[in-house]
Amino acid sequence: MEWFENWFDNSARRDMEDEPIKFTQKIHRLLRARPFRSFRLYLSDGSEFEVRHPESALLTQGGLYIGRYADEQSEIPESDAFCSLLHMTRVEVDERANAG
Image 1 (cartoon, rainbow, N blue to C red):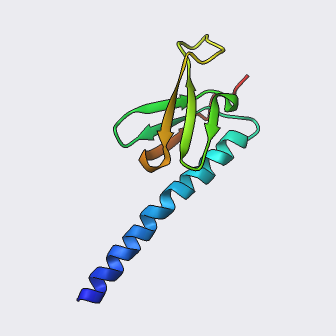
Image 2: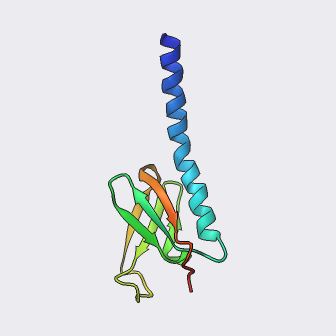
């Protein structure tokens, strides 16, 4: 039984280690997509962030820096946020919206 527990623990650990890589690849594709569609990131603490334009996001190996806008009419981000890849739980693409 011990071999099974060790295999299961190692297997689960490998799956968890692959998740940030999958999110990195998915976000990279979303940022490079033409036409660009805005998307929303959901984090493990319940927070969410919208990426309205590819120019307002910087993807690194550890996470995503996102420009945060004051309102819908703002063209320049007011502040920024860092979203760690380890805490991203979901990405939703707005199929209706295109960056202008």
